[in-house]
Image (cartoon, rainbow, N blue to C red):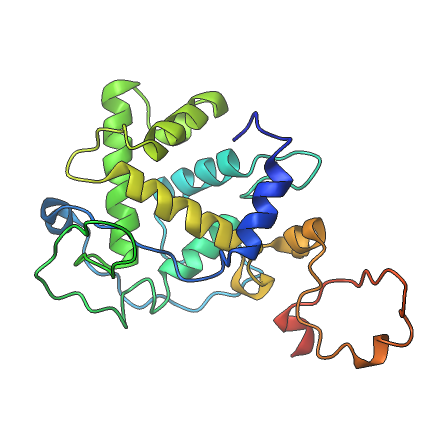
Length: 242
């Protein structure tokens, strides 16, 4: 992550092409995790994408997501850090939305751990509850093994922790660390590449990095003007057309 700068552009381009802006794949956890999850959040007040004020995340959750975003997307010559790009604001808005509350999810049991990939959602937790429970389990494991919560670790230590989780070697109590890491990576990349109207991708930094033009209404007027010439327009978001 932090020490793999050479491959970062290729990774980020691949993530964008693969459709990281799709809905996060929330992974299975155990029944005990479902029972210990926080209650379903109340409908939050509206917040603009331009505001960095948190709508649903607690200070501890905000600190965790900030540390994770800055580990997965560290500041370098390609872009600012994940949190400076608005990734945490994006996550907060998504978890405060109807999606975060599981409004359209079927969450009645029985739940079974899928035998492989390609299976549907198998958990009673909403996305909001899933991430809250995952953060709690991760911080409890780290306090036991490293004496500190995730956001208090150094960048190198956080990088090591995320790799351990990605390898499925994190011994979280009643929670699947690998699946939590996959969901965390998904929603982080969604925030980095999403339309800025949703709170992430501030100043369209990721779009500029990969040369994505955004959402132009039409290319018809440019076809003759740029025929056989490099076309490098200023990226445009949904807000630019409103």
